[in-house]
Image (cartoon, rainbow, N blue to C red; front, side, top):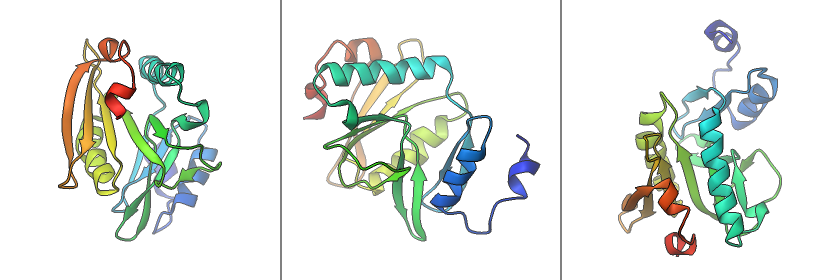
Length: 184
């Protein structure tokens, strides 16, 4: 897809419905997100390492007793902004109860978002999304780096309304612990 293909067809104000339509018509599987400030981001589909990490975390949570309907990969969430809702697509979400079917879910029951850093998404995942998720009041945010250890940084929303780093650990170590140790 070229910039010409996308750029000439964007409406002046992009809505979450517009993003859903763009994703549905994108033959390349790109993810479209709308920042809380109204900026559109287009990401390529995840690669195999990214998918393996998301799957490993999903299996870990489900094996520990979380219902499959509460552990969702690549589902859209509504992120409040000054001019209406933005929409992000975290790599993994954990919910306190099953969610209604939909493309852009409300945040009320959201316990955790996980972002797996992809080449070129470092600043977006580490800075922009971290800030947006904190401002939205999401209790926990985990960031998985793509270094040799696949370091996971576990954040918890602090009293200040910003995320505090709880710990950093290799993904392999995390997967050998109980999720309750990190979600309680």
